Image (cartoon, rainbow, N blue to C red):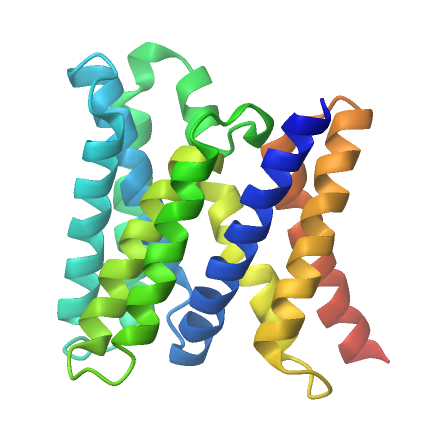
Length: 238
């Protein structure tokens, strides 16, 4: 049990670190639905593999569709007015398509795509390695003239791995909640605060879900969401 929690703790820390970076960048760009749309496209890839190829090449199809989503957004971001609405429609398209093709399979697979149980993740260190590689690429290409394209491709790679590990809702929560809180204060560096806060919330969710026998993925999404909502309401009121 200790080994299980240690491995999951490493994965959660890696998830928080890489998603906090992307979350802050996305919120600053004002394209918050980007991560949700790409995550939903990755989820559609998983659903596609379940229905049409009997769960074979799940990661490959997930990556393919998330790359398609990232490329579409990268192409349209400077050429379309009200880009956030367009990205929102891309999310609706992929989510509804996922539900349609999974209709004959029941709701179990759809629920797993939304939020899976991170406690039973198998490829923990593979995911951590992917996040380390993504971080290295982003750092080395930070001044490249293709940095915008690299950013979206790196986001697609990250989201593909994360959706397979913890589900669409958890990915969106990891990306948005800590970054939103961090960018709505001026006392601490946003990225550092996002990592610290995200890590604390992740472990609260993990421990709470274990002791109260709750689904881990949905627990993480709930704790992240309620924390950010309460923070912003409290900040506004007081």
